[in-house]
Length: 396
Image 1 (cartoon, rainbow, N blue to C red):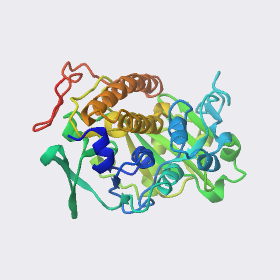
Image 2 (image 1 turned 180 degrees about the vertical axis):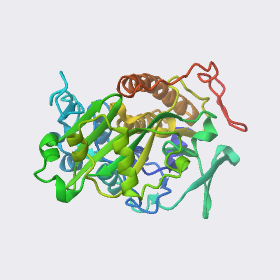
Image 3 (image 1 turned 90 degrees about the vertical axis):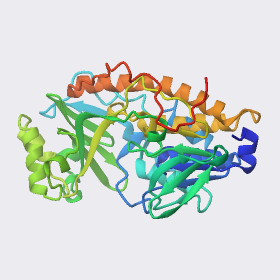
Image 4 (image 1 turned 30 degrees about the vertical axis):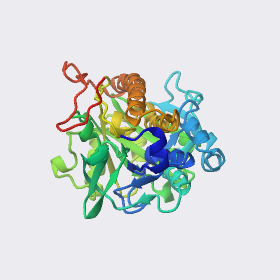
């Protein structure tokens, strides 16, 4: 295994996944002289919906943005006024103590797609290989790793970083643990553009976001860039929905019928306002890794972001933590030139696991209060470092 100086001078780093975490890591490593390629399953940056708006916190996401020297373009794309947040009940009445100043410690908002594009635009030409779906990651000779793709030639790299999200193929080479479904699926929809201007929802929303909450159900509405309003219904549905119930999301009438049934005890006026949506729906099953989960370090292989510590969006920390992961890994790799890569990875993973353990627990506390979610992590084996067969485990 190469030391840090050799990795920077003659080594290769493969990042799997071109989301915010993977793109940020690539940006930071290129700034510091590393040879980096990013492999993304999507055919292009716009191949699928990128989600709504998110705020970048000063202690995590904005730290990474500043280190990547992207502060000015971020300021141009973000919206300070959009961090305004209100929480109301099923009648649309303000909940006590949940006024517009509730989230004043939040950072400026930016659409996830805009953040991703900002990061992609900062990379050297041809850094990202699109339409590269990973099938497996296996040990190769001389301590390297071989990444196999569907219908593409494989590559070999000295360091492989999984930034490939909740369904990570890199993760299964590091651990047998998989994310667990919370029982709640968020169903995303756009409010019809011809209806929201000057409407009650436009007035209620203001420049930021509103959470309608009652009876362990929510509808989250947020104003995004590009003249768009997004909302998310919270549905208690079986894992694998809609396929598990052969439910057709292209049948707008059936979808809205299910929504109206789920929120039948809410104000008819509020529900009418929140079901005037376009006929495109995107399911988002919420999953979580066990808070205390950890794995045995393997030389030349690691992961970050949702691949490592996916959690529901209840606290809005996911992308912020992924960007912080990227910053800390880049700092470690560009630190002491005499250090070996395995030692750097072990230190990075130990710190990331300790930090995200508390974040996941806090997130699940919110899920318990808002949705009645109860996750059982009592299995005594789950907190143990477990590696799959033929792993290269660092001896501690």
